[in-house]
Amino acid sequence: MTLGLLDDLLGAAEAQGRPCLGVGVSVPGVVSGPDGVVNSIPELGWSKLPLGKILRERTSVPVFLENDANAMAYGELQRGAGQHTSNLVALLLGNGLGAGIVTDGVLHRGARSAAGEVGYMLMERSSLRRSYGELGDLEDRVGSQAVTREARKKGIDVPAGTLLTAHDILLLAAQGSEPAASEIADGILDMISMAIAAMAIILDPEVIVVGSGLATNSDLIIPGVRKRLNGRIFEVPDLVPPALGADAVIMGAAELAMNSVSGLTYLAHHGG
Image (cartoon, rainbow, N blue to C red):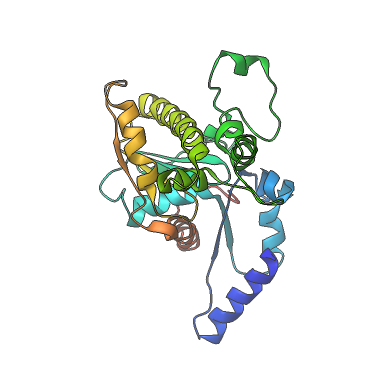
């Protein structure tokens, strides 16, 4: 499906007389190495998939592969809520939870391209006595698999083969249509607040952009987080929704691809 979409988009660009000069791709996982290896995306059954290499073998056009939270952070830095700052964090809550970190105007990926993988944060003492595989402690509490499991446990009807996201539960709680959803939503907001508090304390960003998958309604998250953190950490950063809305990730991927092709990329990093 990914390869077919790439072919379709390249064909559409050529048909419009606007040949594509570069391709930006975002994925919900850690991207590392010259082959653009996607370490793990359990929902898609991907593990150590050299997606960058596969895509580059499909086309002669340069391909730039990036983690979705990093792409969102860069998109908001260039064209959205972060245009007037050089220090921001973009928190992306979808099937899992990830963060893109910009420090002094530069995306910070870390030694293993895994900076911002907040889903692996350990949330309490008991976390030290468990082992985690593809999901970290925090993601095992607010990721889609955990949320779906908890929803079924609380009696919420979830069709077989369906995964609920944290956003789905927050929306149900706001609508008041599922009483059990409110309890689950409170737990989700507690966990997200603790993650944001840790990032605020350690990174001291001016802005934290809070996005929820492809949804644009961050009002389900931000007021609850702000209420939980006020008076509990040194200073709560400016918490804002993505100014680019549902296009934040794809715009960031496009910006990164453009900069890579033009030679203006902020970091000499190939494939991730």
